[in-house]
Length: 216
Image (cartoon, rainbow, N blue to C red):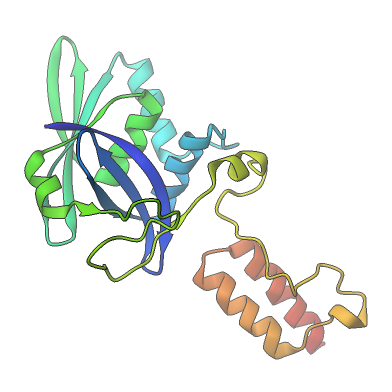
């Protein structure tokens, strides 16, 4: 097994990806994760406290209150694009291995400050090599998506907002009372469709309300 650190969280045209960097390796291991797990992982990475507890916060709280210690997590297999992992917990003096999705395991490891391990054969099979000094984290030999790096410092400065709410396009201005910035139905519909696609539901609701107002 090789210990690994989280290099970054990225968003691609296929969704969110957590990028793990095994120690003493020139490869990284990108693992696709869902929105909620990405939200939990990024909140931990930037030290942002979410107002209401997420599922991983609840599980971590259960561990703490029931005398359960998360020793580490192990990403132990990969089949095609599906990764497999285990939680290694200690309870009543016994070590217990629990099957888990890697996204959940990684989120819990951050909550408990437990180390992440990857089996060497997983790194050999799923690892990729990043180009040197590439801020966009593109990879050699190409893969079917491009990484976009999150700036953690910028996220810390704006952590009071939803950490996955993208800024609106520059041409959009909240001052809808002026004619210069009043959008027609086609533009609002485009912005609404884009917000839904990117799961920016608060923005989508705003665009929908404006569409409704234009229709009145």
